[in-house]
Length: 132
Image (cartoon, rainbow, N blue to C red; front, side):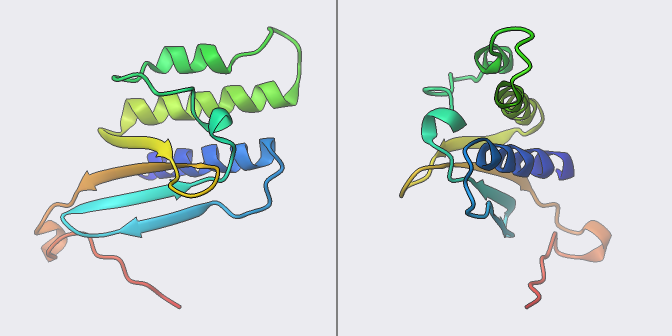
């Protein structure tokens, strides 16, 4: 779970850096029957997603699309490869994953969720406490 959240956040930050976006990446955590994490970036849709993720998504195809001309040393193309690799990794490690355009404005949201296990450590499940 920690790896998936870190990769989703790293992907969003990389997209913001690649497109000189100064807006913060948004992360929300929701606890309930499932623990849900939403990571939202504001990068242009075509940069954040392949035209559409195939169903089921093919991690190798995502990497192929992100790779530019070999050996060009362009930091932007290296960043694109990193974004594609992060998305491919998320597809491989998160069973409940959705990557889609945001409803308003540019950007994408990565939505991941995991079931909570009642009774773990004597509690009724995973609980988050919000601190001001």
